[in-house]
Amino acid sequence: MSDALDLEALVNRYLSTVAAGNAANVAALYAEDATLEDPVGGGDVHIGRQAIEGFYKAVEAAEVKAELLTFRSGGQEAAFLFALTVAGAMRIEVIEVMTFNSDGLVTSMKAYWGPENVTQL
Amino acid sequence: MSDALDLEALVNRYLSTVAAGNAANVAALYAEDATLEDPVGGGDVHIGRQAIEGFYKAVEAAEVKAELLTFRSGGQEAAFLFALTVAGAMRIEVIEVMTFNSDGLVTSMKAYWGPENVTQL
Image (tube, rainbow over all chains, first blue to last red; front, side):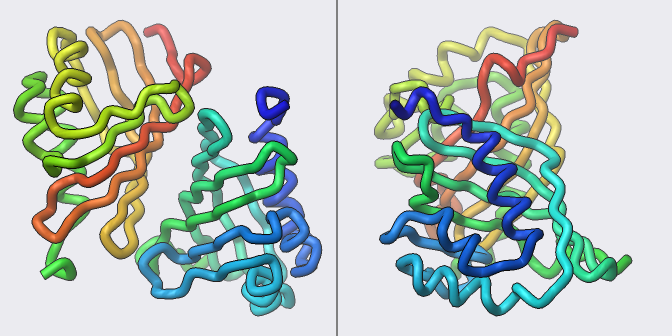
């Protein structure tokens, strides 16, 4: 079953769901016991779908566009570079790594970026 | 001590060492008990510096160029996109994720790429 997963389609769905801005809808793409670290090294790992929804709630008011720039995958994992434009004022290029379960739900997400990757537009 | 690590410099050193083509020198950048998975999902995880040297031995004869395209880091982890040119005939764009110990040695490496990311030149 896992061979049938189209991880690039799942990542595109994730990015468009983030852009649509509803935290509960984004959290629904994660497994119940998923983990989220954004940014990596930032100190917080959000554990579980409820905590993950809380994380996305903090950003759901912003007008966001997301564009997939480079996508790679192997097994049930994906690594990808994408650009996030926030309120037409700020662009952030992020590398994320995600793992998926056989149902196509995200089991872990790690976002690699820092202040040096933020550009004012 | 870990705050002082310049992960981008370590990644550039890794890429230039890979390009120089000596497997033992590349393996020396890894911790004794490091793990390497290249490509992710390919089935093999190489465990320990000796196994890692064996992995690089398989490619040490090829003439390789490596160019860092996008670098991100957080904590003691780095994620980066780079281009590998092999014998002037083939270009592969790879996303790798590495973790480091406080001595700056690589403790894990995962390379995300597939046949669809190989371009004949």
